[in-house]
Structure formats: structure tokens, C-alpha cells
Length: 94
Image 1 (cartoon, rainbow, N blue to C red):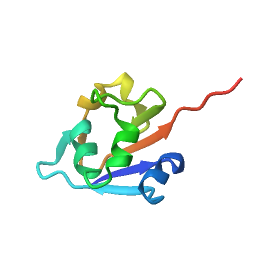
Image 2 (image 1 turned 180 degrees about the vertical axis):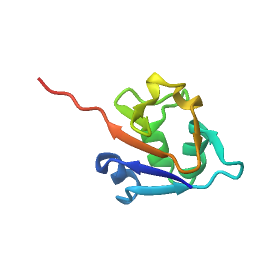
Image 3 (image 1 turned 135 degrees about the vertical axis):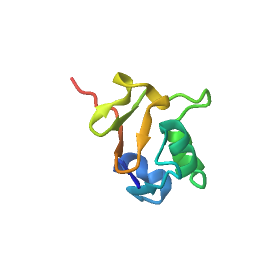
Image 4 (image 1 turned 90 degrees about the horizontal axis):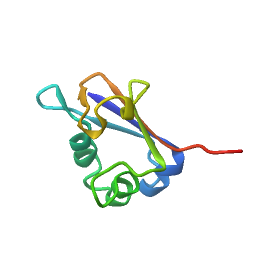
């Protein structure tokens, strides 16, 4: 089971649900496919995270086990059962 946690600012797009689970049939899958399958019935949430070009929106950060996927293989990063995905909005300040 892959645990997916989304920040409350994004959860508003899916009736404030924060925790999601995905069970990969073969034990692993690409992150992009996991998000697509997990949020298939939550189109507003999916398109709040992924843009029309199939890329992570600029104001969204996704972490696999605490490491930003920008440092990994992006949406092509392989995620295995037992791992955790966290999705946050970007934080800015000044």
C-alpha cells in the first residue's frame, strides 16, 4: 500500500480528504500513474496538482519519502508499496 497525504489547501478540491491509499498490483508504479489512478474520480484534485501538459503545477511540491521529486525522476519516479507520497502547496514569503 502506498500512502498519499495532501495538504489541506489542496484537499478542499476533494471534500477536504487528506489521506489516500494506492495498492500497486505489481508492488511498484510510476508516480504519475499512481496519481492518475488514485484521483481518477477526483478530477478537480488531479488537475489542481497536474497541469494540462501532464506536469506538476508550479505552485505544487511532491515528496516521495521526504525527498522532493524534482531531485528524483519527477512524475516518472518509481514508488513502491510501503512508501509515502506527500503533496504540498509552495510556501513563499518575504
